[in-house]
Image (cartoon, rainbow, N blue to C red; front, side, top):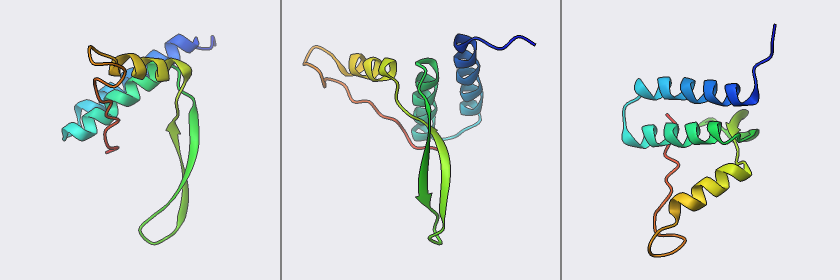
Length: 95
């Protein structure tokens, strides 16, 4: 079986996130999905993080980190007529 190209993997991940976003209420959650879609399309690596739950138990989870392409995309999106930080970049809140 032929392995998917990196481009196809990025597109598939973005489409999967877009589908999940359609079933989610709340603009702050939809904003998170939009940011995640952009991270998928710009090839952000998967990074493992550690946190604690409400009972103080430690757990690990995977998130999309930042790629150079993502960082440049965000920098460009924030740039405007009033300089480098004309616009905000909102990563939203995970559902």
